[in-house]
Image 1 (cartoon, rainbow, N blue to C red):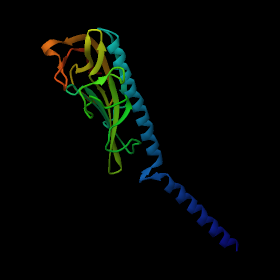
Image 2 (image 1 turned 120 degrees about the vertical axis):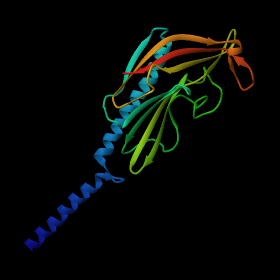
Image 3 (image 1 turned 90 degrees about the vertical axis):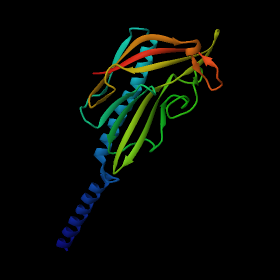
Image 4 (image 1 turned 180 degrees about the horizontal axis):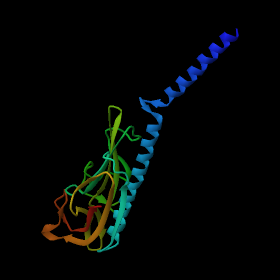
Length: 222
């Protein structure tokens, strides 16, 4: 009986060990790896939101104002930053083992609407209803790996003034290379404002031409 009891105990211990190892895997990926990936995405999200806030702060500081922000401290090739001057946004991409974000759809992290964004519609957003830009995120999953794209984008903002309707926009321009991977610090510099008026104004869908004040920001990688 004693020998049988020892055998049963050994089987139970083995079962517990196997069960513990099995529970440390979710969707085929070690739980620790998932937790590390989640922590990295949390840090990246906070850095991206910080980048948006820093850009807005520099845009409001006047010509000559500057700042810099560290997006990634690691030199890993799993991270990449790209500036799209034509559509006025910055993409921050990160690969990982898992993602908490909805798949194949853009989700707002900051901002009230997709108005006048590259993934939205409309010629402008209203300054009393929305923010001058937005932070979005999109996740793509394949083969137990996820690619998360954060986007910081700025748009036309329409305001009613005593002299009539006016647009304003924060313009993003790359001061050199348009992309960087691994460890990345972004430098932001306010180059002043420029107006588009008269025939150079922005034409709205109703064919009305509206003046636009552009705050020119130059972005560089370090």
